[in-house]
Image (tube, rainbow, N blue to C red; front, side):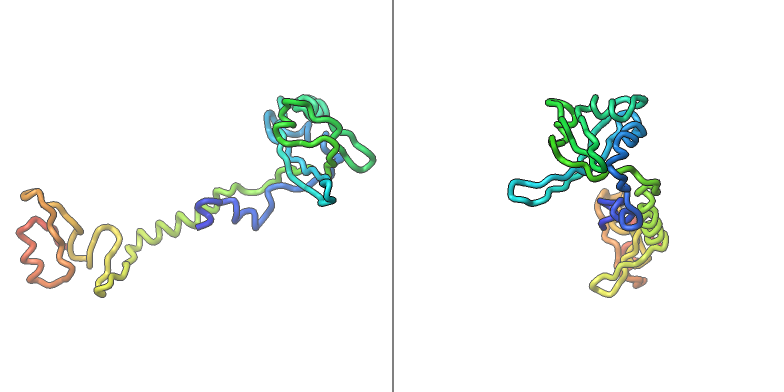
Length: 194
């Protein structure tokens, strides 16, 4: 049932959607990102109480072709490399970076890049095959009275369920048994039989 609403959940168990790269490569990732695509950045800091806060934030970059630093600045984010670490120096007011909830003076421990993995829509294939197999096999569903109701509108295999008589314009019940007397009783009422 989970596959119907989150097909990527199954694929996430096999392979992750993103890989972490060191924050020192943020400008390379910024340059390699396509037009108007999202750059996924992990940022962290600590609260006044001393609790560490880590969150992944997406930043939409503009047109491709410019240097990574320029694309980040155009999106409203200025970062400064400090040795092996990268820190957010400035977040421009009203920019895409501010709307994405970047925080000034937070550290950037990693940048996430998409992996080469199959699409999550492949998980719909087993569900589709299962559905086709059930419908094509005409699997029977047990009823409380011991008879079987087959998919495809047949009751016990002997007549169409709920057939409307064209002569009388009324609903004609279908016999639930293979009793010849019951068949003869409904034969004149416009019910089709196998």
